[in-house]
Amino acid sequence: MELKNKAAIVTGGGTGIGRAVSLLLAGKGARVCVNYSRSREDAEDTVRLILEQGGDAIAVQADVARDDEVRAMVERTAAAFGGVQLLVNNASITHHIAMNDLDSVTDDVWDSLFDVNVKGMFRCARAAAPWMKQAGQGAIVNVGSISGQTGLGSSLPYAVSKAAVHGLTKSLARALSPDIRVNSVVPGAVATRWWTGREEQMKRLAPNLLLQRISTPEDVAQLICAALEQEAMTGQLITVDSGQTL
Image (cartoon, rainbow, N blue to C red; front, side):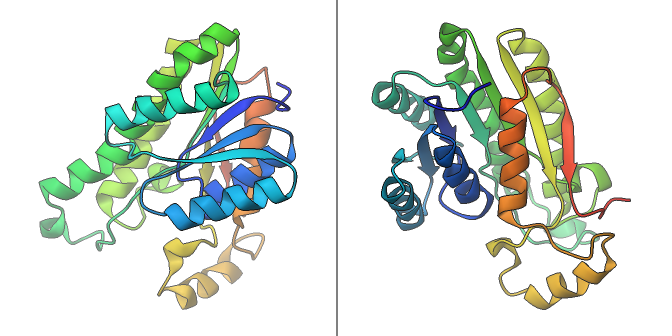
């Protein structure tokens, strides 16, 4: 799919992977809705960078855990850009809990992670799908995690939520075919603010990876855009992890 002049929504688009995707999409000529929940300044700064480079973007607040806000975000994007053809479900949260500390995994932790990480992606896809079908084509990329494949990660519920994202990707690919393609990009460790306070741990990890480097947000963004463009692929989980899972 040619990305030029397509309207894209990037959830959590103001920071980390989301910002890198927003900038790259704009660089390819897409018109970008940079979504944020709380990081307003970051989202507006991302929009400013896009506008300065001659692109087209808006910042839109919406908590993906709230269906009314998701639907309003999609409607605002469609009103601004004439439709919605691309969706990058990037927004995610976590709770840092030791994997063997089961007692700290409360119902509130489960509910909050699934409400954003899984149900939030479903809500966004559901709201955007009618616009994509109206256009006769659409593409969605859900940002997963190798935690969903290995069972390891920042917490047990986080790993399980990402495994659910991978399952959601396959189910949505079936449900929305043939007009809408749905794939998942599955990063390993990525140098983002998620490592804040644990930078030394990240540095110790890098030499143990096959490529001896931590992926950057730009690495992941390039693969996300490639998945949006590739018209012969749907329901796939594509890993980018510098060999971390081998």
